[in-house]
Length: 106
Image (cartoon, rainbow, N blue to C red; front, side, top):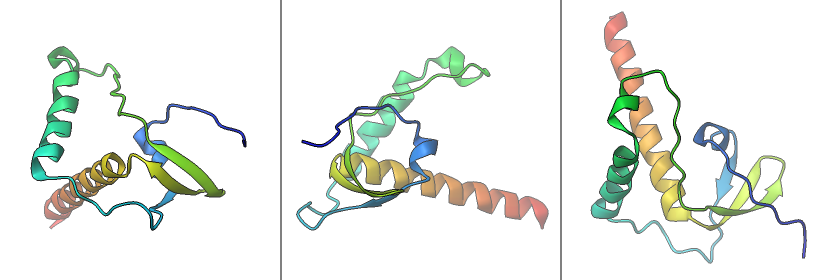
């Protein structure tokens, strides 16, 4: 066995890495309901008092198991559906942010 370790990383740290889905993994299969359930879970986790304050809080996703290929490259062993969903949601939110900023500058 190699060096196995467990660490908790914020989503922002994950954005610095390239993730690869090995060919033995199934394709993306989450339904709209599963995505909604994840988003509702995150929303319900965040206490109402914190949503409107500067206090920091965090939500711990179920584990995502990866195996390092190179410096910033990882094979996703388990958690592909969660990771893909979170990255798609972040991409969608970022697109909305960019579009809003562009409208303000016009």
